[in-house]
Amino acid sequence: MNKIKKYYFQPSSYVYLFIEATLIHKVQISILIGLLIISYPVYDIFHNIKYQQKQFDTFQKYKENDLSLDKKLKKLKVVSIDNHSPLEINQKVKRILVKNKMNVESILWNKENNIIDVVFNQKFKNVVDVIIQISNTKNIYFNEINLIKINKNNLVQCVLSLSILER
Image 1 (cartoon, rainbow, N blue to C red):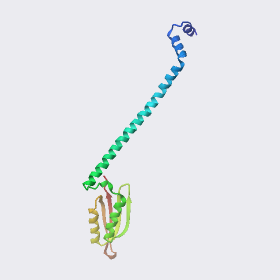
Image 2 (cartoon, one colour):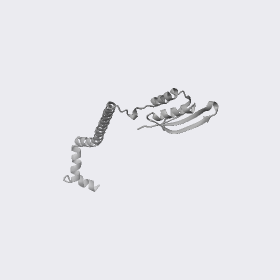
Image 3 (cartoon, one colour):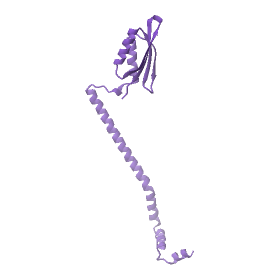
């Protein structure tokens, strides 16, 4: 208690002058403290907005470069490998099978591994023709070929496991 009285009765001490200044300039000090508390979140928000804008600009630049490269490739008549869809590949395989009059038992897709399993029956010569035609198509490669002889009508059952190349 004596220390507090000492500061109160001696107006020349630093503690007394500090307390008196805070009481006199209460509004200015509270505004200063409020600005200090608010300044960092405001800075952080503006920094994040600037960073996101920069990311968006670089993304747009990459997208424009990709589009210009695609246009140049089309002018040079080079087809991009990425432009194949599962529907197109499925149609290619079915077209080859129908053209060679294959008895298709099943066509199964494994989307995770990009693999197509095809099972069909026909005479051996026709099966070989189908295998050659599928091997000549782009983006489709053989993983496995199984030929099983069926005694009925001298047919061969062919089980193909085809993988789709993606780049």
